[in-house]
Image (tube, rainbow, N blue to C red; front, side):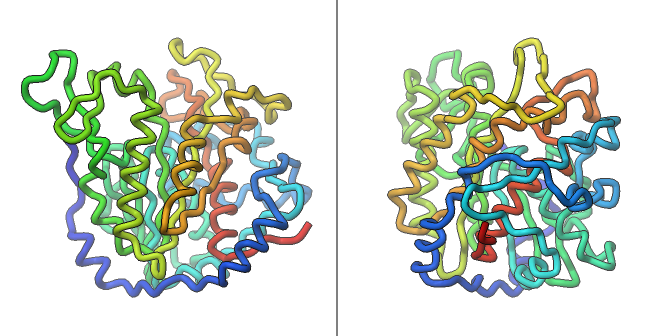
Length: 374
């Protein structure tokens, strides 16, 4: 059902890039860090240094999709850019572009997931470009314009010999046309027991970041005639959450059997809350400030809970970037009507610069393996 859209062989290009494993401290340092600071137990506070955020100018970054470039699209207020995430017992390290560029030298960073993953991918590229003097040395490897239609996008930082890549795999498992002799309501199936057919492209990475969840909803599954399949068996009565867990177990088995933890650092970023007043009518609820009170259903996501549960039983270490609770109050940071299609409100995606930059600050703190004391 899907096809790769790229003009060069990625395996050939990857072979040209040196990819030594990322240095790590021993497991005692990880345990110590976990005991002294829960990165996700905190609050949003106004950044005291008024010049710190935003971390980049979107107009200087050609890799921000027009639809996410809220300031260029007419958003006037910038208060949503001035909030910093403050864990109770430590601080998220300040973004140091020189340090990160050197850390990523000769590396391969891969994002896998849906459009929220692509947004975080775009954010990281823009963050890193602030430290590159020759902007022309940063380019998409196939010369593609950044759009949601393309399954593979890769941006190379020539001066530092690394790539930041994105693979569109919204379910992580295979999505195929319906097999023969099935009920007429079935137009396609998710093969819950088979990982996406582009998964071999993810293997030789140094940093591998997954996400999934936004497409696991009735409208995008049952509403399109998509049902679940395991082996040759069609699972018409299976719930979406059960199917998601089954798909995540398939993903976990693939990671455990395929990924070399001595080379590749694996992350899974959890589900991103949306803030629709009425999704059916596309009525958005973008606020001026973060929400003071958050409903339980926004803090607790069954998809995030499943990720946390599945990862506990894996052999290969996977770091869960659990952004669900911290993002639940950020109804102020959505695209809203400040997109390339202002007639369609958007309370699922996020402005760039904006909240995904904070996700990346947390991600980078794990890669650098430190937090700042409170």
